[in-house]
Image 1 (cartoon, rainbow, N blue to C red):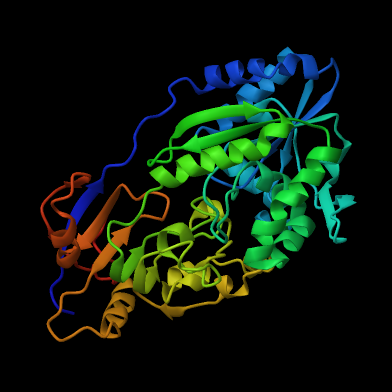
Image 2 (cartoon, rainbow, N blue to C red):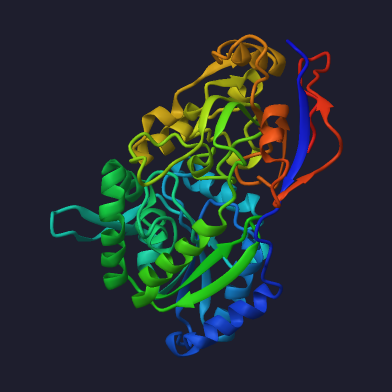
Length: 417
């Protein structure tokens, strides 16, 4: 392999953030007069999904404290569709990884695979809801609002998705995603509308994060304003969404993928990989080869999204739980996202092979980018052609001087974040 120099850079994103998360939640809950909606002794379910949301434990704990203040009985509901292997133990393990346990939260954490058919759409499609959630006296829906990884619309991932997919459990999530990209954009909100009409939803708390995945805004809305907040925060999220610094890449090396970074493990808003979406709606970068080095511990073996890559390491491959991965991919409606790419014993072997199939002219220095994951794009390493393209931009900061891409005796790259 020829000598390759990498430049360590930092991208500067929107960095405003909320400084008093608990205080904001209390104020927001007061603004919708939640105290008048909760009567003493009411069992109140609080939804928590599988995403790695900033301040998640603090947000949920504050909601619990307020519910108790209003004499309600808070109960945390695992609401994550097919994630956690679509099992009770798996979903509880996912939440525990975020510090969401009965002990930490001072409230029970409940999960079930059972659902209730709540109603039907005019075309006959059934609408499902988590059986435990359906049995409670009130529900507080909590979710981050951001672009979805599988479809594009004016409402994507947020409060409506938490209703239709998260509270739909595996059965509901599989049905929603079985409708495909266009079905998701057309019907997901319609499923949510039925749930809002028939389930005891008290309010929703939407979370917006900045370019560094830190809480920038929180807003509490009544059920009739779920769609409005989803639309508003989605527009804001798209404006500050971190991106790779260039649109033409020979080799993207991702140190780690996982469900805690993106629903697809490898965020398609960053790397592309949604062939069903028109280029007029979404223009991702052109990446010739994608190499994945590892799978996060928080993903619990779920490697959904691995099929977007062209190469992976044996280390990552050994960590895949095929049951959890396949259930997620089947439920999402995108089987190709679980396809296994070429597997390499070492990172050096994988990189060497990828560089030989780029189709570049002899002597052409490859356009390489190395990132931690698709959630954290503030710091990365880039090869000289990429560096020369971006070095004069105002939002690009050069970190220590260039370093050569080297490998240790085990064939691992010498890159640290």
